[in-house]
Length: 292
Image (cartoon, rainbow, N blue to C red):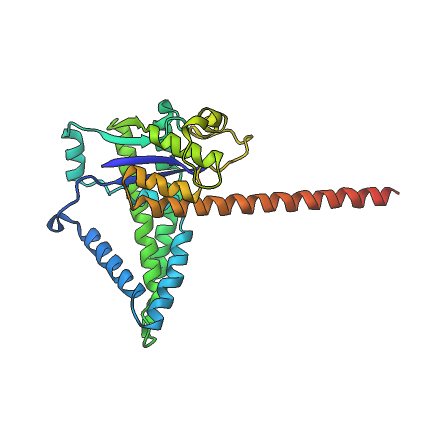
């Protein structure tokens, strides 16, 4: 398998795993078969003629978009089975980690991977068990005729999703503990990242501006200081180009979701900051009026 380490902002990074050797259907695990069948059913509902199916998929896709991109990234890493463990230990090749060298320092790749693999383990464990506990409470909804038990299936999906993210993080930690990875800076990514920093619209002459982006790229390596203001490193348009350059079509959806989530978070943070600033200014004015 191959890992992509793609900074979305100067403080947040997306990890995505590409499986190089697709398994035969006879080699798929029971969980993988259920996942594939559920995905096929979802696509069928999206294209279905029944109104309730279209409504469920419409609001479901909105809910999926709000699931943290960090969780989706960890879910892309396959669970570590005994067979995979033996194959990785006995194999000659290591897991390749591709990243933009100007935006992630090569000597900090291991630290970034370690942070991604460990920082959300407690959260996933907590919400996996809460989802499991909530499933029996939603079982009676199945008595309602016509529609399926959507709340139950949603909790089942969330329990599976948190479990899969936990499994991905454990596999990532195993790779790090055994030093089964090798870093591979990808120059084409630097060009595309720079294009997004220097231009708000698609641009074809990013190479000449590569040096001008160094001041921003140095802030994105690893986990920057809390004193630095968080800045976006990717936009939707160059996110699509990155997926094309890496020849990983499925990465486009992951980048689109991650960029949208980080942009929303930064917008909300800025609005709160401005609101706090206005309140403080109003308080100062009120105090001055009182003194008069």
